[in-house]
Image 1 (cartoon, rainbow, N blue to C red):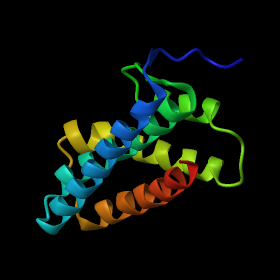
Image 2: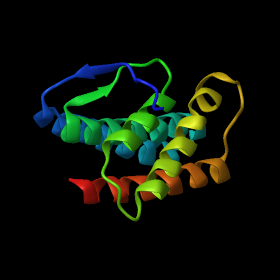
Image 3: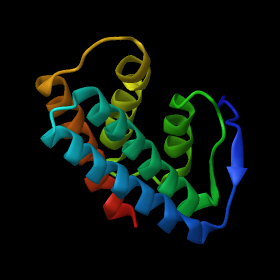
Length: 134
């Protein structure tokens, strides 16, 4: 049985706005990486991934997660996207990124270049898959 995710409904054409936001977060992360502000880069990487996921759920179903639990975005994306060969890997990448949100932002842990390189790799794999879905 699949769990019902709290959603907010928006115009499907609004996916372009979420895609733009995702791209801006991505560009911001790259800027923070250049400045070696690792936690800021990490948070922007996570937010970019969430916005990319929102862009797809909006495009495909005119909705996005309204839940306070960002893992619900992963579940919603998994429920809405058609099955194809790279879907499971993309969902896994997104889940890994979201797992870092609380740690990178609130735990007091200091991220370093190696941590961010790993997060960026996950984001770039997820981003590549998302862009193929448009």
